[in-house]
Amino acid sequence: MTWLQGSLTVLLGMIRREVVTVNLDSLVKQGRLPWRPNAQSKDLEVFHQYEIPLTGIFWMGQAAVLFTMAFEGDGDLSVWSYVELDEEVAAGLPALTFESLEMLDDWVDSQFLGREAVFAIVREDRIGSRWTRIHVESGLLEATDAFLTAVIQSLDQVEDTASRIRAKIAGLDAARSELPDSPELLKI
Image (cartoon, rainbow, N blue to C red; front, side, top):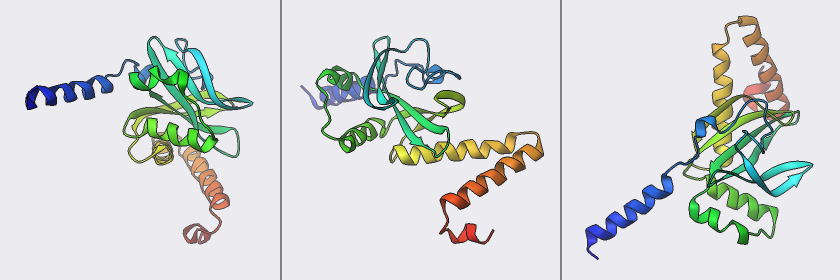
């Protein structure tokens, strides 16, 4: 095998792994359960649950999609994230076991790293109207932060000024209670 043939083989393998067989733009639907985000999601396999599925996979056709509650707030809001698994990872799912929740969390984070994923706001176990695609560059928590920042910035597009102000005041109140030692917020 020549250098060029070997390089092309590696390149084709990389391209094959990046082929998206799931339409990320239509992965989640408002009002659906986050572990069943659309009517095409089938064969749920749960890795972690507490009253509801929190981390697992579902299948859409031949594609395995990993889902997880990326972050849970104090109230009824949470952020969920979704990523299509590589074919090799999906093929190894039957043999996959985790000795601890920490090992599961590390594995989940590794599946999102460097990939484009869908993030969605969930209220009372139902997908809300806010979701988007984000490239996960440094970790799931950082991508969740970027998603929520974008959601908060979108408040500026709300036409009713009084509603925008109420939302921002509520955000400040929440930030003050969550970050009591922050010097910037103590000045307010």
